[in-house]
Amino acid sequence: MKIDKFFIRIVRDGDAYGMNDCLTHAGDPMVEFYDTRYNHAAWMGRGQFVQRYYVETLLDGRGGLCLMGGVPEWSVYGEDMKIVREFLTNEVKNGN
View: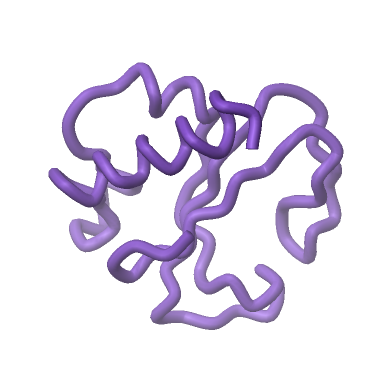
């Protein structure tokens, strides 16, 4: 999913993730945020890796999300965060 400058990716149990997709995830679903303005080969063409959270953590939250405190433009606010939570609910909580 893409919203604003971010590519948002769900990482499920058994999926490859991390730099060069060298890790295999075991556990609850996670969501990764990439800044699509930067293209780094190590992140498989998804953009600049910014942050990763467990899906459940984001669904429990309210309001916006600061992905990295030292980089103000790496934040998701208002309606965009609502869209992210709806996407996560549809894709993970509803079993898609």
